[in-house]
Length: 100
Image (cartoon, rainbow, N blue to C red; front, side, top):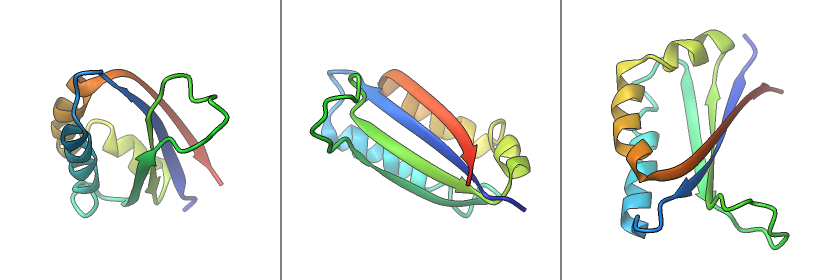
């Protein structure tokens, strides 16, 4: 199996607090062990000085053990539950999948 990276950028709504942002990422992290094939979730705020983040304030990278488990994750009930928490906090989101 070839691991797949599920990379995303978030622009949170102005009214979303730091504690709400942290809660969103805690919920995302909680999927490890509940969603088959999801190996790791890494996340953090934008820290660059280039200013090329186009308003996106946070990024994440999820590692799946295969393209098949990534595809199974998309409709998975746990993913749907977390989306219901995270999406209302977002102004914009960008997601990109790739293999190494």
